[in-house]
Length: 81
Image (tube, rainbow, N blue to C red; front, side, top):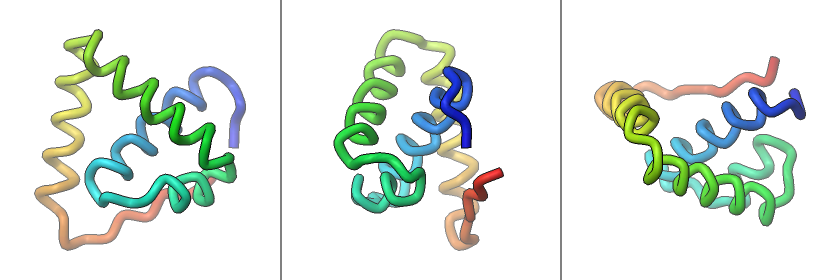
């Protein structure tokens, strides 16, 4: 776990993807990352706002979503390194 900006940005992206693709509740996402549900909710909203502003980021996230959805029957486990 990292508390640096790069780590937080990656965590926010993964939390956003987890929330949008698997429809996981924020409480589940927050437990996974060991953060408060309020903070994870804010992070997901913040990342969503970034997507609206940054077209390149939006395209990248859409590609990631396509790959994850295409392989939807496989389970993905996020490991904490």
